[in-house]
Amino acid sequence: MKKRVLAAAMAGMMILGSAGLAMAEEAVWPNGDVTFYCGYQVGSLTDINVHTIADWITEKTGATVIVENNDVGGGANLAAKLVQAEPDGQTIMLIGMNCISNYYSDIWSVNPADPEQFKIVCGFIQPWPNSGCMVMTQADAPYSNWEELAAYAEEHPGEVTVASIPGKVMDIKMKALFNGTGLSDKIRWVSTTSSDAAAGLLGGNINIIMLDEYTALSYIRDGSSKALINSRVSDDFSMYEDADREIMEGVQTLVQAFGEEGEAYMVPNTSVVAVPVGTPDEICAEITKVIDSIDEETEGDWYDRCRVNGGTSKYYAFSAEELQEEWARLDPVIKEICEMQ
View 1 (tube, rainbow, N blue to C red):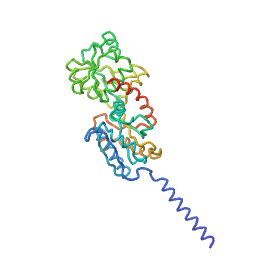
View 2: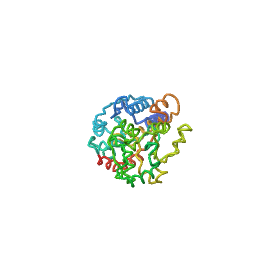
View 3: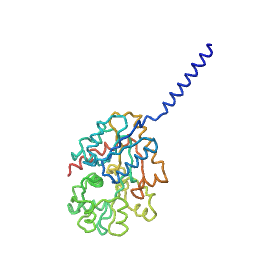
View 4: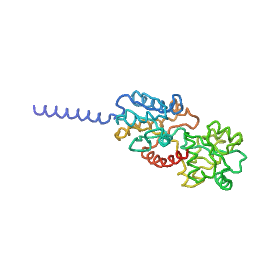
């Protein structure tokens, strides 16, 4: 009798132990429907990225992900809602680096670079590389690299006109570079739009604009413009075809031009997945794990969808610690730029 009771007790303990193990192995996130805030226009590139990630979360976890769009103030209302949401990981938001400028321009009531207001989970860059944009000038300009531009601007203060497109990521990249190198007060900023900046470059009334690498390549190929510097720090151009790779390798990166100091002039175009402050680390780890896994896709429908933005588009994940440190560096840089306007 005692043996039967002992055996039954041991069996029960084994069952409970197995159940406990199963519970321990269960994912702590998501726990029901997930709301994904997107402060960008429906159908925009970032909106497509958000829906790609949302569908990936569903694919990996089975959870329903509801994307809520509100592009008023670059997502100002959604950001205010996020900081008030339950810290359970069920409400997340995609925030771009340019949203720091929204705060210093009094558009947002909260600063996404402040760890007491937002908790960064992870981030990604699309398209790769991290901050690759080209500073362009006319093909016949009297300077062909950054050093020559700096010397010319010193000798002819106020003569070089540089396109300023307030509120745009590339405007922040451009101004961070000119401010950081001390060249900003030697040139003349011309406030304009993206299309007018390109037209001004081709027409000759604007000397300097910034373009993404793919667009810049088309200007270089047709002989209308030349690149002075690339705002990236990486010199990996392996994603380009041979002819384009040769062009890209002929343009200095920030590190090639300035050494390690060049990294301080870079403004990475990183998107961040953020949650309310107080969200447990184990939940953030699960969110990161799911989003990071999208980079495991190297072919097929998901890979093609990740490349919707063009030939170099892909997701590259960054850790929360790395991003928080980077955004802390950018906070005063962007504040200075916003105070220029």
